[in-house]
Image (tube, rainbow, N blue to C red; front, side, top):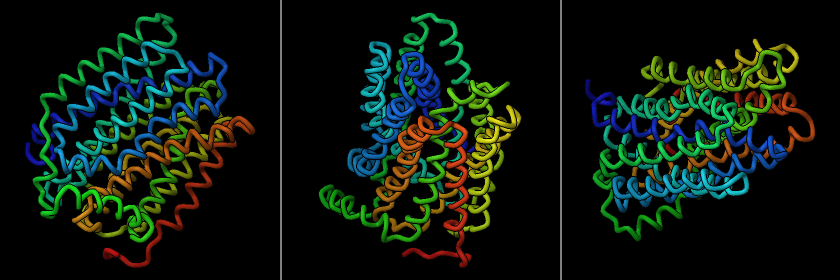
Length: 396
């Protein structure tokens, strides 16, 4: 096999799978531990949201640092720091998780940018969507087994199991990461400017978030969709227990399994031609809304609606991110494309964080079901944003 399925890229996908395995476990353990210690939904949302909120802050700079120093050097440094963050989880209680989540968030900003930009730069145009989809697939794959492992660790009550798992993941990720190779972004040679000029361009690029119409549209869509995804990830371990027949691990595994299957089976169906496909994106946002509504109604209708929502949510999640990212790789100006993609991905991170920050207080005041109904309304409102009369959109 060649292209996006060749061995050099497969090795990067394996590294991605290992790196995100810890987070698949932590996404369940942290809410359960928080609830057992009497923490409010607002506090749990703060701790969970701190991870990607920190990632959002550092991600725009990550693209520039990777351009200047090369992905290999950056990758090796952040794997060491990530190992330290995972060890910190084993040495402290809930009060130390916030610091560990923030440290892990910094690592994820540089890790994901190094791999995604390396994949984008190394693959030909027609295979970009496949490479991004396979990277996203492997980032999601741990969600199929991670929740089940986390529930098993929690119910076992053995205090040594969780620390051992975190340490093992840290070591294994480091070993695989140090043997991986990523094409340096600098080899793309988009311009011959100095590192200082690149830094100036990075600062100027922040204004593109509202001046560039394509970037703004994609960022708003990704932000709102990610709010819904973040609310599900953060509070499902607590919400599912209130539903007859509901099981958080089963829900998260079903959603992640749908993401994995859809990203692999439909990877060639994701548009990779630089055109804005209104109907496709509108359908995805409708799916987000229906999925959230189904999850909300499960409080009354039962577990069947919960699991139907999981499948719909997984299908939407599988396609939205790679579709929008691939589109932006074509329409953004090449000279600062890496930084602008970093800003777009930062909006996805912000959305997931807001899913905990904003939806936690709503769940405290009202209920989880009402909170997910709000998520459904947000998703539905994005259908109008996704509409575009013209079949092809040129760069601003």
